[in-house]
Length: 255
Image (tube, rainbow, N blue to C red; front, top):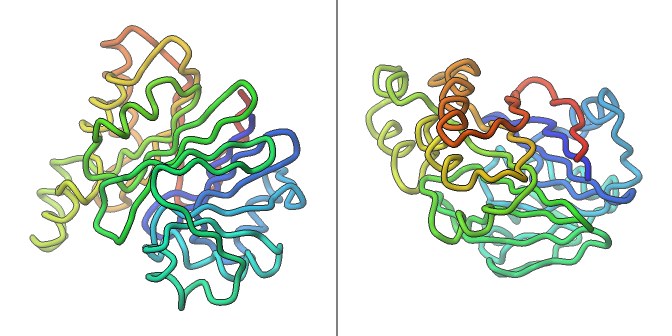
């Protein structure tokens, strides 16, 4: 299995998962030009891409899906609520709707959908499985529910939201209502919350953790990584740890 986080943050999110020359994109908030440039830069083959799955309808996750789906003739998978909310943004595209909890077969890939906790119509998080390996993608999550923890407890790789440092958020420039939104159960995971979740789901087979959706205002890669490393030290396991960026893709991780 191959994984690349092409972009992660409030300006646009896009994650590539590939198995046996078949790829699915999880969200796309990038323009078609930017997506193509980043995919080419790391050596991803767009011919393998057949599907894009949507976690929720916020613009940083969907604003680039319409042009991409039309140009590459992709099937767009999303909940009915997300499809209704993002209809005008996505425009003409082949859309297949699902309900949270459904498992979608995409050739050699299986896409498990799990209800998330975020301030939108019908948010989901994903677990993508291949023949032998799996990756959980958990971002835009205000609270780690039992459903989410159960879904990712055995994954081989984990893309995990580590959105904000609480001190930076509280002392930062956001207005009070936005600080409250970010901290709420329908907001985003802090570095500390990400660390707590990581301690709960970490196991000996977890080989890769990619910290994602970092705030450019209320966090730094160093703070997010420090919190994750502290959590991993407490459980006595050290997978490969990386931090995704808003401005450039990660390398391609193979596992």
